[in-house]
Amino acid sequence: MNVMRFDTRQQMGLGQHMKLAPRMIQSMEILQLPLAALQERIEQELEKNVALELVEPGDGAPREDVGGVDQADTEREFVAGEGAEDFNRLADLESRYREVWDGDDYGARKPSASAGERDRKMDAMANTAGRGLSLAAQLEEQWRFIDAPENEARTGRRLIEYVDDDGLLDTDLDTILEQGREIEIENWSLELLERTLDRLQRILDPPGLMARTKQESLLLQIDAIVEHEGDEDGEWTDAAVLIGEHFEDLIENRLPKIAKDADMPLERVQAAKALMRRLTLWPGRELVNADSSVVIPDVMVEYEPESDTYVAALADGVVPPLRINPQVEGMKADKNLAEGDRGFIDQAVRDATWLIDAVNQRTNTLLRVVRVVLDRQREFFDHGPQFLKPLPMTEVADQLGVHVATVSRAVSEKWMQTPRGMYPLRRLFSGGRESEEGGDKSWEAIKAILQEIVEAEDKEKPLSDQKLADALKERGVEIARRTVVKYREQLGIPPARRRKVHG
Image (cartoon, rainbow, N blue to C red; front, side, top):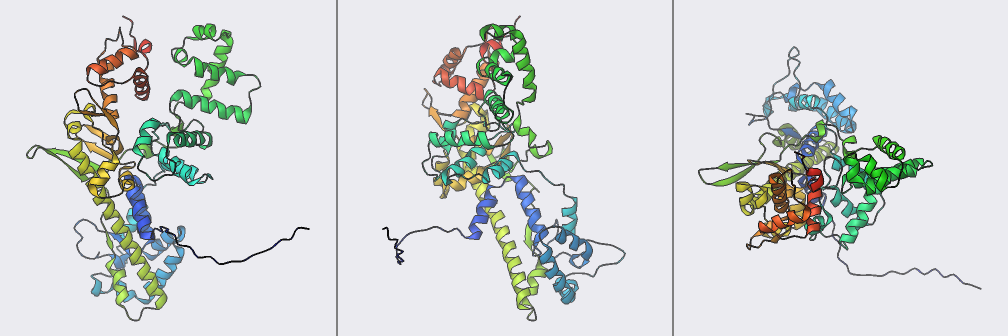
């Protein structure tokens, strides 16, 4: 006979646990936001927080038309969103403290019935077109609902940062591994990256996203179609064979050669090719419209010839200056204010203060990181991408006295306008190798040199991959032929036989 015993005990143990304060979490979120997302976040906060307002040009004093808010319009703004309860409380406060809102004590003037004036903040909200989520943001939304171990979940978010506009992974896993080596993700390894990438490719919709090449993307799309529709006629199998084993010939439309090499009737090759019209080379574009893909630089870099230096500044007028609404803050001094109303005002002011501090911290951190980049990558700004140096994020973090995760968040999805064009800020952080002359070359610089060599080659006698490797060696960069192939494919450069121009 089995006897079941229930035993209740109390045990004490010592341990260390880190809990992030809401204010710190908000600061990290704001730091990581790209410019368009930051603008949208500020607009949302302006709409729902009565204590937050814009500092308008030439407005050094409290706004004159605060008392001129059209209450019906304001009510529509709040009731339409999640702020209905806040609006009801605010409307009640306004009815009981109308003299405070409209009185001369706060530099306000009473509204003119004929003027029909409205709060300029509400006008700005009404006249601002809605923005669609970026591709990376949409993929993160999908990934968030996936039940995955913590390290795999964080790795997936990390990989999504590297997606390009077409929905493909634009950086090789070795570089991602190196750039994230100091990020605190358990069991950070190439195996973890490969496993997570495989899961992303199978889960994200539409199929074909996060592929490393267009060829891989097409095969992923075929796998998804076969899984949902089956392949009774074997036509999708034929299409997969053409893409997987005869991709170069397929691109060049060498169908008779494919039929011979694949031992397949020409009619089957043509039928499989016709089926491929259902596939896309740009799966990411199905999620992002043209307007939302416009790049807005966070940072502007200019050259000052007088001092022979490059200087950086945030894009003028992009992030609106914010402040605490003095009318709302002044209500805290009213001794007759009910306790519940006082708590509402205190929380609104506190939330507004936190947001302002987080935006200011984002500005300061981003500029500090960029100034280090300007110093370390001077040759890039002078001469171009071929002169990019290896710049690990850990080195920048050590120099600034911050955690490497802070640097990673600061550069995530940020763009820099330079005299040499627009560049993603992350591109200036890369591993590399020492050249024969003893200098350092980043992977990005090596790719730029490879691009330059291909552009200068004789188009009637294009260089093979081995000859490209030899040409790189002559420029002081020694890498294996297979590495040349990898970089060539990442740059979208076809092999020599497809680059040949017949005279």
